[in-house]
Image 1: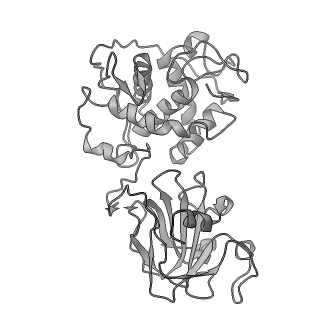
Image 2: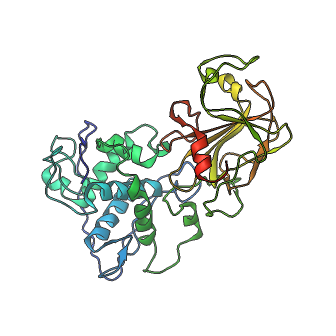
Length: 378
């Protein structure tokens, strides 16, 4: 069970009437009434209650029996509220992290009054003891609290859960994302072993929801795990960390405390995706971001999910767009000197996995060189 969480947003949530589901070899439940999705793709479409559950000795990602029944109740609670599939995965992920999908009748040192699937506290925000011990009601109350978290859909999943559960470790729930996705997928088919619909391709093995805008593309063969140099054949012209402000540059905290590493080849060279990644930003910077020139931000697909940035590309040279998923070695654009730059080069930076994937990552940067060396590309 999780340690140090408050499990409360301070809002009294009204209990719902529990609906008891009967599970046999195959669980059939009525479809919920979905709400309207604001985006395309299975992660954003309204979730449906589970169609089937492996029974008896069958297991999914190491979970079986009552654990899968409880996961089904979580999925149904989300569907009743018109929440998307991403919320179903997130709810199962939270319950794995709190109770391993068991309705437990004890707390811990940080929360001795915590109970149930979500280890909800006896503080008035989560209903009665019976409510907290009821899988469907406790899941409903979890999702109602989640809906009060502004922008939860865009948060890293463990961070979104943390905003509700208030765990001492905001990263506590990360390891449970992949098994949660596996469970939601397994309960979304009519019988064990059935193939998932192609729409579930939008959820990768790590449980991440891919961009599914109509013009998004997948470029190249993914899943290799290999890395390549982002500017092959180049030389390093400026390293990570404190430095003298380059002559001719606009000097500020970012130029004097270098947030990445600069590689230069001389112009006209292709900037490559160093690893399999999802493009989250690809644009000519405006406002204060004009210092980046034309730039790209991307999220590594494989674990640990680093966030990568590429600055100063030639205007008009972008070969990718936000939403694309690209394999290592995919050309992104051309080495240039746009923005706050004193010569043709690539500014390449890496940020930790908890950095925002769709905004500049200045506060999360780490030295790219040790990572590139560990991957054999430097």
